[in-house]
Length: 65
Image 1 (cartoon, rainbow, N blue to C red):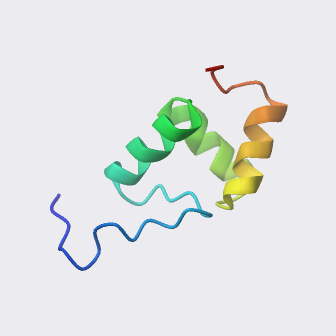
Image 2 (cartoon, rainbow, N blue to C red):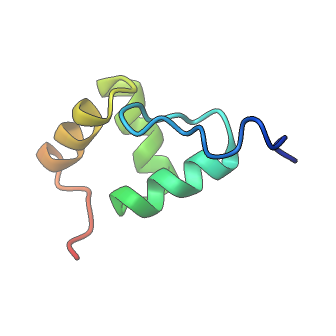
């Protein structure tokens, strides 16, 4: 899927979006989780980054770096 130049780089840094595969790849890498774990976190905690991070920390599903 192609992104037009106007929308590239407009990823919100405080909300986790699962709408686009590029967003999913970005958030899985940034948070150190699989796509499935990211989806579960957003479903249970909502899309706010702080809530997703808190959920992942509580459930110990993040990889340690």
